[in-house]
Length: 273
Image (cartoon, rainbow, N blue to C red; front, side, top):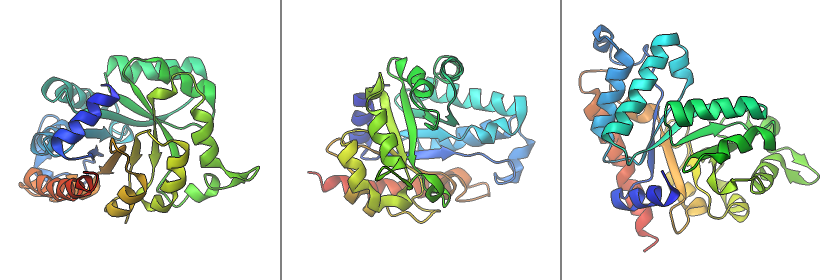
């Protein structure tokens, strides 16, 4: 998917919502455990109920790898279902990969070619040659971890090197990478006050923003500091939507929660007009 196609979907749906498919067999409705593939059955129902309210889905790969071969099969069926039935939805493999060049190329092939995701999250700690292999795939996007929403972010990301915070170095240096036009960045909603300076470094890049809702981030603050003329934001919500109910109405409950966020996003978008 091209960036413009993503922007078009955002304006069409009046939403920049990304729904995280962090599917956990211990949290899904227990009656689904009787299904042949409970994870896929859960994901399919959530997708069918919410696809008109969001522009992206983000399976966290760890939740699938934890179940071995069966989990990987569930992931494959989920992404194939999305690509077949809702091809205009932007898909994110939340895999947080990153390794030396040859290994990164194999990771890229796995998620971009075999599974056919539109994007993947990448840890940038190993630098240029661990990131650039992902950037060479046409109409695929690499989402670098820049400033995350967890407490441990302060261990390294905000430490100063030669007077500049490390996350700012990640942002500025990455713009020099070959294929950097395919970069997006993870910035946590709990760090909304940092977005003004982040926008000075990457004024037009899309930001994937976790942490709204369960982690306490403010949608309004994120939009105030981070929204661009093309919106430039993908706000992720996972647990707050997919686990809105653990009863037979789980899909309907997820739809209601997604609708609440979509309505709030439409309001924020209206301020640009």
